[in-house]
Length: 546
Ligand code: G16
Image 1 (cartoon, rainbow, N blue to C red):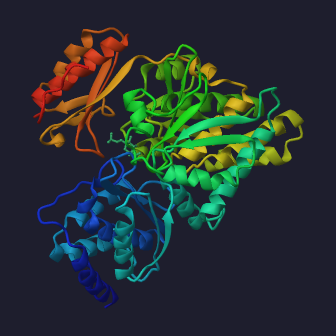
Image 2: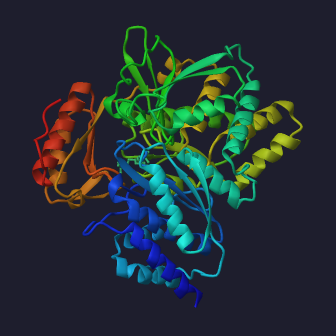
Image 3: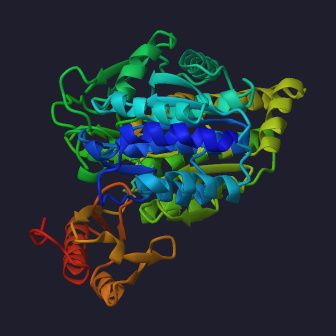
């Protein structure tokens, strides 16, 4: 029958994308990620998986070739579900079995998925493919295409796009254009219009000619932002640096570098109080920073962004007089001060999930307005269908002029936000608009609360899977003795907290610590790293004090 025939062509083509012997990979925090040279078979097979998912969902599925914040030599793949979310967790297991299947097992793994998920093999399938600027990405994207066509499915290759652009496109395709026009140009037009409509509502005396310095991580974000400037005719001047013209992707630049190192990319010439921001390698994360008059560096990370956005939204809710349920979702990395500020001063409920946008996104869907941000700058805002509808109706029909204006501002805000996933470009425009509308300087934004000093470190171990965690990754359950050691260490400092977890994107264990002073946060992070090294099978050099 059909199914059998199709699998025949899969088998044929698969021989051109064979799996290196003995290689085992795990679907991680955001898909598969490792050295690019090990990924050809994974890409082919994720093309296959996307087709099955597309048939099952009767929708377009996205495949993004990127390793985001990882070094240039790495690559990876993120799968995008119909509404633009990350692939459903149940399918991550299929992805792992398919990626690890031996050549002769591929058909049976496919047949197994078809059976378990009641996939109608005769259903049409469509896959939207995108890639970042890595050297390896083009060839890997071809492997995805081979996977898709070997199952007789259709595809569109969108070429070089940011990850959030592909998520947007998938959502547009599956809502028949309701979310927007399913092209990169459609994305530019939608966001540019929302941004210009929003800042037109500025009533304050704030200067609407603004500039921001953008570190593009030498990646796709820089390229796409330059394309977008043409649509953004609004008095926002973007000085794009690290645009890929000469520097290496994510090397000494980008959101991850700035957040983890707590310093600006070398060579970025910051004027005092000038707003700067950094994207990551696929432009789904953003952090802001500036230098004060005294030459001190200040970082405004995902937590500060979440606070700014939720303050703005809460004020809008008051103005439109709607009783909608708003919450903020964070992870264990959220600075303790941010959580305290949100809960105690802003009176907004805060939830903590495991690392990975898929977890935060899922939780945020439970509320009328769910603001989610990882401290690393990955996040967005979700609006329930009914909340969005109520706001749009108010913007159209409300007779009280003040309320109607606020509802219009709310509607423009919704239009500016990429609700499918964290999006550096959309987040940047939203932040710029909020600062303007609230007439806030970057320093005033920063002063909303003061971060607890913190430190993040990485430890190399033989097998990071020996560390298992619980309580949204805040406690380690294995290896035995590790958590007890951490607890003892934490007790030695004031306002302290620490946790460890295996990374799902790099072959390292991540360590996070915060305490009353930077010195103490550094000392605690180092002590915890040593504990990991000793108890969890550290390899290479022992962690040194900072
Ligand atoms: C990905 C995920 C993020 C996560 C980050 C680090 O980001 O999308 O949710 O915070 O990896 O994850 P881990 O600590 O498990 O390595 P990106 O920007 O690299 O795709």
